[in-house]
Length: 151
Image (cartoon, rainbow, N blue to C red):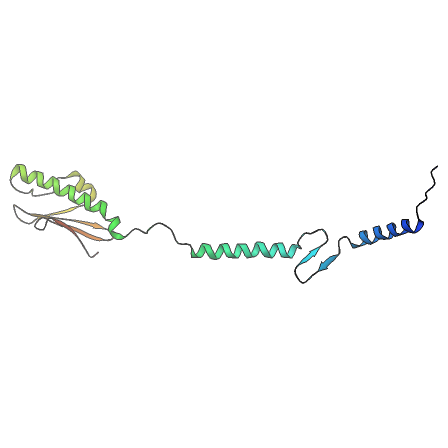
């Protein structure tokens, strides 16, 4: 058997060093910069507080969120109704062109579907009106324009 010629104090020193290293594992080192243990992981309370902070920021930002798209104005919603009213007026104009006078009652299918009210002012003129969620649209044949009146 080979004779161990190393210094016995050397072996004792290594054993003491190993015991110190094993004894220190898992102990917490507190420095002025951070709180960490020897295996370089953050404590659970720190991780949970970061997640809570991020959730709080997300909730606050969600509450302050504004859409990047412009909000529609009331006039945008009434555009379809205006076009429908003008199409009914064209139907009445076609009758006036063929018969020489405006009809006594509304014969336009589109006008009936939209709920357009027709009023004959005289043999040459008429008025159309349509109630919408935003007010009452009125087409006046004299002015040849659609106007919004109060609801």
